[in-house]
Structure formats: structure tokens, C-alpha cells
Length: 409
Image (cartoon, rainbow, N blue to C red):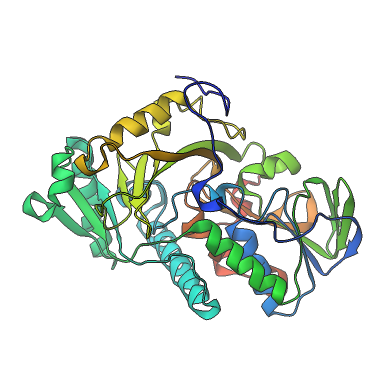
């Protein structure tokens, strides 16, 4: 399998379903601007930072290469899940029980914080808390799911095993035998969420600039930062980097720590109600959900071509898109339902699977939060809040947990 450039081959790329009709929110940066803090990147992490700083009365300039949420934050499936990309049992094996539990709890805190801001701002972003369902695609995975579910319950988290008559017949007909339902998980329209927070931040005084790719970041000392774009510049006391997959393109230190990884996505026309919660299958490589409008949003199958699905180019992978379409046919209610959107997006995978938060070596006037490893809506909000805590208070429990210092020395 190999990637096919957008607009060529059997499939044509479209704008992500979530960004249909999205209008610009702000002008391009032109000329010289001064601020207390300059935030780079307007995805979910940048939105968290901008909103928190605005509430604290900090003067903020916010710079985005494209439009708000037009990167990975508007190109995903809209899952708000707890945990990392690894099964809990494997996370425990990699990190140890205590750290794995703390990381898992951080993702639950992330969800709670997002739900709180949705309520406070009255955001209409299709937020629902219907839980999520993890499905096993093989006997081996069934054992892993059951082991993880038991460990989650032991550590105080919800995890309900569904098998036999307890598993919806819809999934049994598609070949699945065992699932685990996580009751606390949620879902939303990711672009509407991020754009809604951005508009609230602008209403609090944040100066937002879209279509302004950063060409240079200089932060030679604490209290001194400089960001240059093609037509403007921002001078501030501090720069906060929230660019995830693109961090290595503007700050070399991140280049060998965060890998850009592409994800393929599609969306269908409205279909009969079938999927009552977001679903993860095949170790999380396959994922889908049905939104309020009845459209099924499906992504994954990156494991079919791991090498080919690396890089920042938002191209369609014909083989993966074909496999995704064929997968939908396993569900009788999806047969004949047109696919209306096909797109891809670039995620930032850290080398150890955890976010990287805190100081940027070589740039004393910069802090960053990147490397969310496919779970940006699981960790990026609290990591953005951690950047603000570091900026204003000099300390943060979340930043300590995901500290960039682990890659130094």
C-alpha cells in the first residue's frame, strides 16, 4: 500500500466533515505586535492556553499557521477518551502501576475540565457522554481487554465487560465477541469545541491571528521572546508552543522526539441509528462513532502501512480508504450509505507515548506542550492548563508528570 496524493487515484480528499462551512475567525498577522505571552498553535491545546490566560488577564497574541482547529484538532473522530493509546495493562507494564494510574487519572481530569468549560461557555459542540466501547478483534486481544478491565476496576476506574448476550448483536454479527464499555468517556464535534473556545478567548481580549505560519521563534532568555511570520512579528515575555505534530519543523529540539503520523478519516451520509457510543477496535487502530446527525465518522487502519502513514502531508491513502469503506459493509445498516467526506490529518506521536510538557531546551523564554500521540482530546486541555500554571506560578503537577526533562541528559 502507498499514499495517493489528494485529488488523484480513486478517491478525492474533501475538507474534514467538522470544518464544513467554517469561516475565518481572525486576520493574518501584519506588522509588529507586543504582548505578555505569544501562543503558537490554535488547536485544542492552544485554545486551552489562550482561554486560561485570558481569564487571568494576561495580554495574549495567538498565532496559527492555518485556521483555528484546521490541524489535527479538527481532523479527528471527536473522541474524548481516558487513558493513553496503550491498553491499561500494557501502560502498567511500561510505566508501573502507580504512574499508569496517575496518567489515566490525568486524562479523566482532562475530560472533566473540558465538560466544565463547555457548560460555562454554553458551547454547542455536540458534546455527549455515552461512554466508549473497546472491541477485541482476536482471541489474544480478548485476553488483553479482560486483563485491562480488571486492572482498571482495581484502580478505581469504570470498565464493564460485555460478552455473549451482553454484547450488542450488531457487533456480534460483525465478528466481535468481547467488548469493554468505559462509562465515563465522551464525544463532541472537535472543531466546534475549539472554535467556540477561541471565540470566547477573543471576546476576553486575546488577539488571534490566522493564516500566519511561524517562520522563526527566538527566546534567548526568560522574559524575552520573539515570533516572526511572513508579514509580521510578535514580541513578548514568553512563547508557548502548542503545535503538536509540527513542533519539530519550527523548533529542532522536538524533531527527534515527536513524529508526525497521518490518520485517515471518512464520514458518511446520515444512516439509521446503530452505534450508541464511540468504538475502538483492533488495539485502537480502528475507531468510529455516529454523531447527532446520524453520520458515521470512521478512522484508522494506520497499522496497514505504518511507514507510509508518516509525515505532515495530508494525503489520502487509497488502500486504507478502501479498507475502511469495506469495513462499514460488515454492518448491514451501513450497506449502501454514501461516503460524503474523505480526509486525513497529522498527529504528533511522542517517542514514549506521553505528552511532552515544559521547558524547551535551548530556548529559555519558551515552554511547550506537544506529543499527544493520537489522544489530543484526552490530554491536551490539561496540558495547556499546565503551561499556564508554569507561566504564572512556576510549578504544575501535570507538567511534572509529563515533563520535557525526561528527554534531557
